Amino acid sequence: MAVIQHTENDVSLLARLMRAEAEGDGLLGMQLVGNVGVNRVRGNCLDFRDVRNIRQMVFQSPGGFEATQKGYFYQAAREQDKRLARKVLNGARFHPASNALWFFQPPASCPAQWYNQWNSGRYKAHCFYQPTESACPEVY
Image (cartoon, rainbow, N blue to C red; front, side):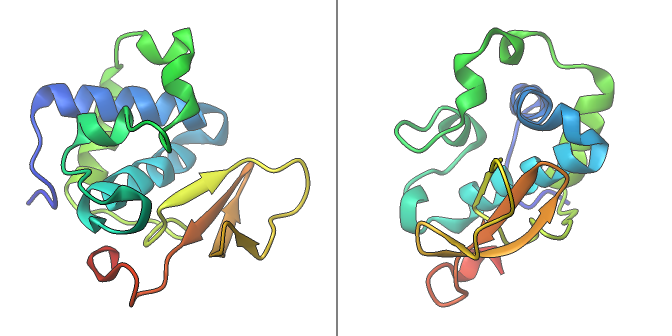
């Protein structure tokens, strides 16, 4: 059962975002990005108040994803990527992005905090950051 409402267009949009942001980190890396996206829609907290659907999340400005500014994002979603997107839309969560709302690719090690949010771990090139449960209970 889906954890957020979505259409097939939303599945494709999320799949394109996951690939554009993290294809270099493999299938799990792409699913981690998907977790962050789903958490932003579910959370309705902090920087993501009133982000209520996939389209709003993907194109949020300011605070959205850099990938939407690059041509690679605008290529058609592949079936493999849509399967990964459906998994996270149906509630699959992967550490360290289970409760994360942010990620970035630092030039070195992950800072313990990033914009006052705590590091929940690293996977390959990306560091993930999660809010406290009291600040954003819907992602827990």
